[in-house]
Length: 155
Image (cartoon, rainbow, N blue to C red; front, top):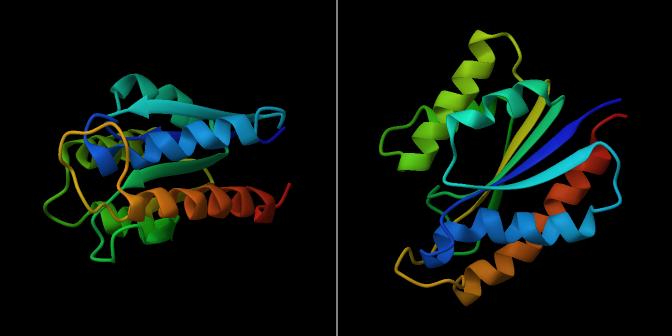
């Protein structure tokens, strides 16, 4: 059976930096009864995630990322687009960790066959446990996009 893994990445103590975690928490409730789909709040990443990524057939990463859009804008990077996005300079600490985790999976020839990065453009990275209103709006779109992507991938 196809195993789908959704990773919510971010630091929930830095307002919009926690967008991926907030979206994953919503998805965990929505997808609780979906077999073979695992939704994880992974915070700011860890190399201990490598086996989880390698075991996945499908991988969706939810994260706040600066791609030059308006605050709260959601953008989906698929497969090779993720590699291109992560190869740019000026990555955040956890984006570097994400690039490293993807490289580990690539080197072991266990990179998930289908993968996506659903990125939400942050407005503020200051101290605070709640996202800004713009990013709060984007969270709903990210959740919807993740669900639609899961449904669009062949069984």
